[in-house]
Length: 432
Image (tube, rainbow, N blue to C red; front, side):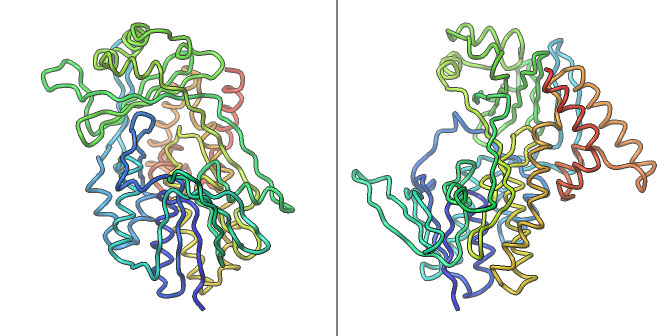
């Protein structure tokens, strides 16, 4: 019997799940509903976005679908390490053993969409843009949606056999589960806000050296952090994280003050930032990240949460998209194990993945200290762990950030190994 699958959210995890389900032959007929417009038709502003970085977790999930890995690499840049910039002009370089692949999130979604449409016809897959989920009736197995692109909104109802909430940190599907017994979800804003900015790539004859295959980072004593990397198209994308309660950013009143802030604290960026971007940065609202921790990722025999809908995380460790794509791979493995028995697979998904979701949020909040002094200790710990692990690999673990960003070791195992450090950072950050 063909199961009707409704996926809410046409982001990377929702689209990849459609790829995986449709590989199972004619078992599934899929409808995807996305509140945004079709990214292949409507261009999205990059001024409030930051490139995502795909490591082995994300790439291994993409690699299982023919043609996807090559398509993603073709629109990505490889990052082979991180350069830490100091105010005195000196730098420290941390290499990576395996490259990161960085690209714009919208371009990733487009690549997944185009690959889907090239393989499957409308009898198996339909994608509906400009449709917002309003309500889920868990008893009748129906979902109420509205079209939002037309002059007058239209309400319509669809039924499902299997519903997947891949609709992000503000998930409407997850909201519908809040009224059910035994489902608990904690949503908590992280202590830092952020703003994005875009810079032109420095000219070859410039005295500013920002290598294109490196992530560039700056950190101030007050915990303000900047990450900057190159993108295809001749630009660099940056993001500045700063304390919500005490910061310099929200007090800026003119573009001259913006330029002065960057030139004094982040001189390489200050020299590259044009007046127009300083003006845009001034008026760009600060964004807040909300983390999500749920005690269950499924409901009954027919509802599943994946990605940010299940475990939204701080961007500090670059795992949001990677974890979401890994969710899809793990769920597909469970479908194979239980012979496409949806009820059993979604129940086991919670058993298998929920501890990792909790650990992911804990690692995202507390892997990196806000204190500059403790951050130096972190760098020393990483260096020492690498050396000692190479000498005694059976006794000493690999470095924390290596495990997070360059392996597929479950997040819960990583947290267990580094519980002492995480507790130390958590206490320090609270005091900071």
